[in-house]
Image 1: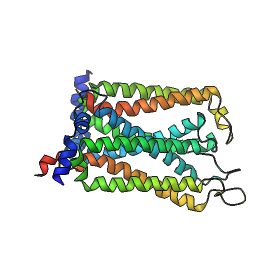
Image 2: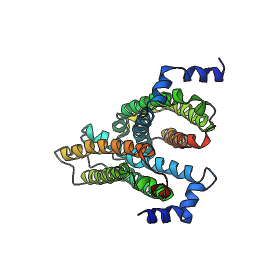
Image 3: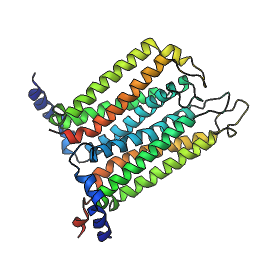
Image 4: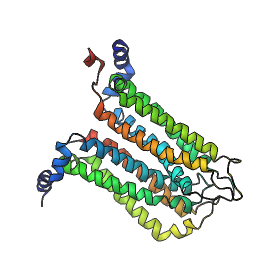
Length: 169
Length: 162
């Protein structure tokens, strides 16, 4: 395990991300991770709040553009998150909070996909096409999951026990 | 009162003691700061995206109703942000990224005021499926740009510490 972590943190890309002496290295990756969070969790939160108000609709809602923004945000988050993990693999992979955060993010994405499916044409219910009760339950769960994912993400900076694999020996 | 005097006063307050002497105050405040940010950027940003033509199946008025939650998020971010300043004032007042963040927040506030004075009435009357007026799109584009700039400046705070 320690050998794998050392190999990861000593590869050229990992060293470049950590040590590139410019704001366009690690700081920019960190900013992109925040931007991705705002796109995927932010839009998801706005849609959840809209659903929880229980709107009635004249036709199935077209939210394709917002859904694409969420998936683009998720893509930015996945790539920037992989780069951050590669920079400090031992810091993340030896911290149980990291695994908890990843589980929450996956759950949040699953809920977002589930809600998008509920809102798809043909899934709205009732004579005036109200949002299904099921979708409201998913929306409430989604709000809680994103809040927990954000909190665990921030706590990663304060709960790690090592920064580099060499500290494990 | 000079800036060093303000910094000396801030560091002598009980709030500074609360932030700096308790291990979990800063991490909890930072977590809440990000939750507030997600709430504000999520509701305001999604409203902006709708004005720019995304998610037309939802009327702007329906998304606008969630902006009150965004205001709660903004309030949480301001309070927790103030805690950070009380904790380490010199790290913020001499930090160029912080100055840019404050300027962007001010411009965002002015953009919001201009939107409500000039455009909100027409925008909130738009139905689902309809396009927003060009001027509303301009306000939305400015708002989104400033929100991204605020997030960027916020993340750069650590790297421009004096």
